[in-house]
Length: 267
Length: 301
Ligand SMILES: Cc1cc2nc3c(=O)[nH]c(=O)nc-3n(C[C@H](O)[C@H](O)[C@H](O)COP(=O)(O)OP(=O)(O)OC[C@H]3O[C@@H](n4cnc5c(N)ncnc54)[C@H](O)[C@@H]3O)c2cc1C
Ligand SMILES: Nc1ncnc2c1ncn2[C@@H]1O[C@H](COP(=O)(O)O)[C@@H](O)[C@H]1O
Image (spheres, each protein chain N blue to C red):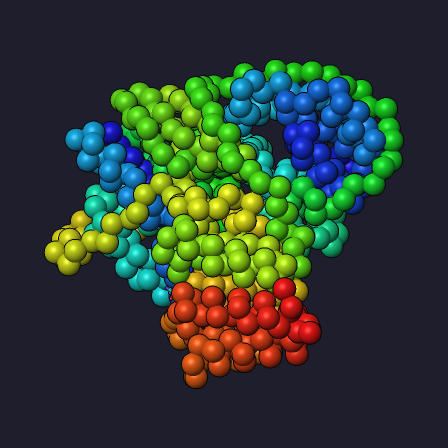
């Protein structure tokens, strides 16, 4: 079984760099979008169970400056390779900077068609930490003309031509059966991603990692959405730390502050 | 004339508020809804209603095939920001090749919108050329009553995937969004029984109990109506007290607008202290019982 895993080199939203009330995208570090590790883990487990086939991570670099991001994304690719993914394909091109999910989905679709070939499953995360749109995998399914099943919390059965999964929705859990190939997205609760041992990290250096451009994919992207402003949402906090004294003293202090703020009114 | 396509279920029809705000005519696709929902769409000014019978589940691919002929020429497509709504939005926008904006909070011009960004840690303004798919919280733009007499037709969209079972989720009556005071619990609690500590404190304060994602989604110690954060509920109480919560950006995204934030954590370097007005560095197991007793006395309860 061949499984494509979608791994976004995402902006680390716990480390957003800001200046003059702007988010400085170029200075913010990248990390693997958290839930894409769950996607990678699930792909590796399925491959282990099915005893055969391969797992391919596809990553699309979206942020400037391209030269620096290339190296950063490559390091992130090594992380999923170390987990046990067999091969990584990184799409990196100045033409992708400032594009929306339309371009991301088209780039991934073309990688699947032109570089992967035969595949059974595409697994992505329920949402990214920086985009948080939950749009890219459904768009890929639309481009490829195959089913999309989102918010999968458990893959109950995988056969050579079908899957049975549990979808975790707001009010209910649905058990859904689909033909393969299909695109699925997993939730954070589906598994606990493995942390690779040192030996595997070294071995990952030898696994295939390729970089492709939009030209290599024969793709021209249109730009029909432009960001005109990007501000951090910040609220100034007092950051008073109550750390010394006994438990009793700390409680008294907190109650004192809370009554000053009018949150509680002691009699 | 601008024609706006709206996709909604009977329980998310309020997204029509955004169609009203954009102005123009609304073509409303109601998924698994009946005459009553069509009538309600009419009250919100629908020009035309298509009742789509999706069968056991709304499969985006089947839905698209059933309505594809109606979608060309629409200037905007509106979807509710539910899990199914987002999936359908992605699929339909993908098929049409139009950009999609998720978590739209305001309309600045018919082609310019503001939205949450960076996992709700940023605010973004985006300008689009041509048609666009907009995903919004159903209650973000409340629709006004402006009755119309829409033509109503019916379609079927039989799913290509098969629903073989469903389990209802436990649901309380809590509306955490409306709470004035919130005592919120995280992984710092070691056992489900220990949540009692927070519940007793909440009772003394007259507060509601909130929680981080792992408490609701992983451990299922509380039902999902308690879940605060990016993927949970957004709250803005007078006071938010985070107990044993580390303060990851996805949690902060849900409580950023609280008036006063209190944090209790053993780890002095926990990120939550950067988002708190008052931070107590202490073991919750020691601190919360003492705080509760002192408050009980102070408040005369
Ligand atoms: C796309 C996405 C969406 C997400 N959505 C949400 C969301 O909506 N809401 C949400 O909450 N999370 C969400 N998460 C998960 C989020 O990233 C964090 O993993 C989660 O918030 C951590 O929960 P926590 O703080 O309870 O646990 P932890 O991070 O494990 O923190 C536990 C804290 O308790 C402290 N502690 C331990 N023992 C004690 C003690 N005895 N006394 C006091 N303190 C103690 C520790 O120091 C630590 O800081 C999302 C993640 C992703 C990727
Ligand atoms: N730039 C990208 N490169 C690779 N995969 C991506 C990218 N963007 C999104 N994805 C995949 O799509 C999922 C949902 O992303 P989003 O639509 O941004 O919320 C992610 O969890 C990834 O699996």
